[in-house]
Image (cartoon, rainbow, N blue to C red; front, side, top):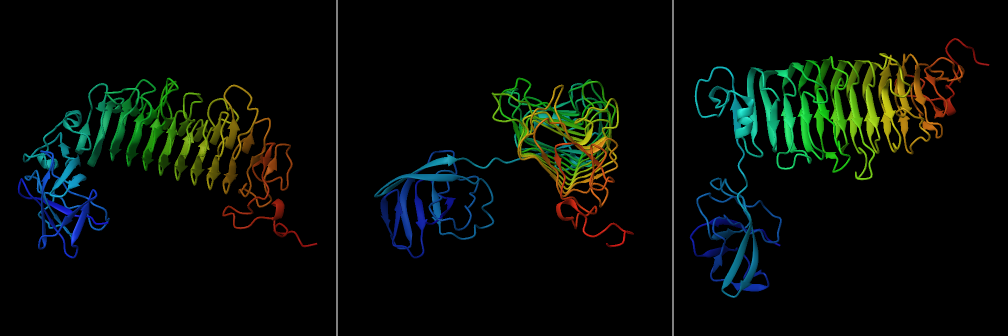
Length: 497
């Protein structure tokens, strides 16, 4: 199995160079060597720059000179020379009979991507190669001029996008260079697919912006994603402050049909002071995602929740939201849910720090909590390593406007810390099924207190019925547990019997 490098040379002749082989087999036909050069004419589709990739994985395909076209010299696998730097293609050999070899080009030159610059300030040159030579003064103008895969760099300064925001309708990266403030009427960025609006856009990145003093009317989001099935969306390293809508809003499948959003990455964003309205007051609302990661974000002082990860039960969907990871986020001072998982399967909620969640308004058990597993049909949810403090409930399991009759299978709550929660550490509102909440720290080495006002230690956080909490951790680091929940040794100050 050999891989051959190709350089386009003359228009009529294919020359194959080999070091040690006497014959070369292509498509069942054997070509005999003439000296050290194999010469056979080849037919190559005009307009392509072919490279023949035969059967070995050694080396990289040689990139061709952009000004050559029809036929090739194939060289042994060696490091390509520096002058071959453009237009990688692959050609498949389709026939070889005695003195003729036929090729079909199956991929044209790799598309070149462009960086476009936006600068609303002083321009000192031309050429659109840097912030000082930017060709655009408006973000939408650069985005409209961009092609799929391009990057729009927004240079330092303050911008007020037009009413209705900036439309991102194709695979594109929009990134801030320096301190870039975006304000005005939301949404600021709207992601959707113009050719098929219901299916959502793919491969969009928004990075490094300061969204400040953005107003809206609800269910939009400062960054809002339309349709369903939006994939490979990355929103990272942004700040959102003094906004009246969700910072990030994706309301999934409004018609309960189509595909889930896939492979989102919402990373290292800071969201604070979401003053909100009656419909959209969360830090982020993410509906119907799968295989996505929400990590490293800081959310505080919203008018409703911190992070909502929501699914919609429907026979037309492949599954409700699933296989998502919510980790290493900090959520504080939110009146309702700190982190909510609804209709989820196989989700992981780990190593988050949630404080003062769910203490506003009229408390609803299973909803006003640092971490809420809210609504039925949830299975294989892992809640581990989270620090949950000073909330109405540390963790709650409940259902909307009705009784949760059965706890989902495979839900585990372990390695978490429940301290200072005013109503309870853990509440399981399902009428059947036992929640497995073992090896947690309840704020006391003596363990939690049961809902009846008693318990092994009668000192730690309250737990409801239908919760298995033994064994428990004897300290916040959970380095030791008592057997079956019993501390190892007597409490401090109590003599041994």
